[in-house]
Length: 127
Image (cartoon, rainbow, N blue to C red; front, side):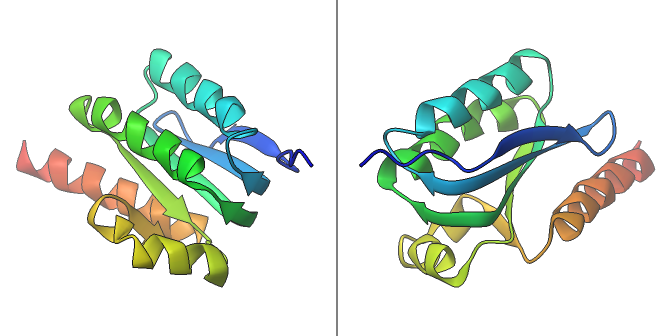
């Protein structure tokens, strides 16, 4: 049975940070849709991205692969991809696979956004 994301929405928190809200399953059948959204944001010059996973029940290796495949270009352009609000069963896989070495995870979207904002403040003070 094909699992579709229950929701896929991209929103602006400001000019610098985009939030992608996803729901349902992220697997081989749904990962393409998320990849298209990520690539579209990157093409538009949006490199600070938060993925809100609050309503995601499962992420397959194909789903994790989409995030990993985009991280280099995002970071090469001074941005980052942050994950927020993972359910315990999703976080367990994240932890077991040691993805914390690649991505930062946050309990809330606001915390992820605040981390972006604090990085911007640090860069402004350094100049």
